[in-house]
Structure formats: structure tokens, C-alpha cells
Image (cartoon, rainbow, N blue to C red; front, top):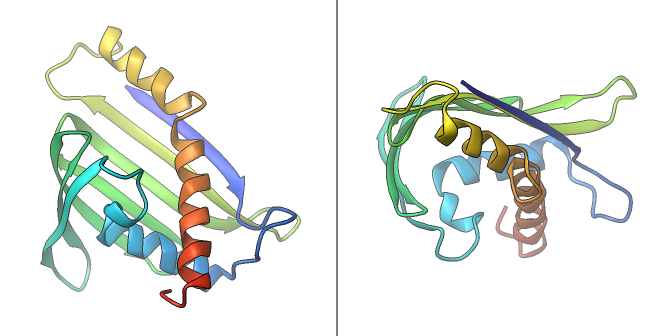
Length: 157
């Protein structure tokens, strides 16, 4: 089982401040079209295939792998990506919350397994190391907020 987590401040010193609503808009936009937020060429397809009052289904190709995700939005608070098909099974969560000092934070956490692979085997350990590494999900959170600020500055948020 892979468990990974990372938390970053939404408004570090020196950055254009984002409100909770603006940070949320960025998270929701990323959920609907990851191509806008991931490095160029990493996500080559990202389409909302179904939508209901409680969730939507996203079909994407990321890093050459086809995925189908059921995504729920807990407004202004949490986006949950349930891995319906693809190499992983489980859930990935992006959550906005205030810390004990009232500062807005963005947290990523996931509980995942790799389909068809040995639990806690070499593939899962490698994936765990990737998630926790320098270019893992902490970097993804930072790039999400950077892109959100760019969209805000361009008047597209």
C-alpha cells in the first residue's frame, strides 16, 4: 500500500495572495483539465466523460497511461480522485484547510495500490519513493498554485 502526504502554505511570503475561493477554482480547474496544470506533454488527453450532481468522471492519458477517475468535489474544501482504471487503485485527495494559525494550507494525500503488482513489492516501493521525492506531489502542489496565480493574473480564473 502506498501512502503519501505533503502540505504547503497557499500564501507563502512573496507570492500573490490567493483567497480560498481562488485556490479552490484552481483545484477544480485542474480536476476538470489536468493539461492546464501539468508539465507540457505529460497529460495528452483529459476529458470529462460524465457528470452528475455528486461527481464527474474524467478520462485522461497521463505519462502515457490511460486513466478513468471518479472525482468528487467537496466545495471549497476537498477534491477526491478515485482511481477507477489505470495502473493505480485507491484515492488521491487535494484538500484546502486552515492551520492552527489560521493560514490557508494545501494538502495532498493518497492511499493507493498498484493493480496486478505485489503489495509492498518493488514497484509499490518505487512509486512511494517517487511520490515522496523532490519531484513528487509536493512539487505538484507548488506548480498547481503557481498555475492558479498565472490564470488569475491573466483574468482566466
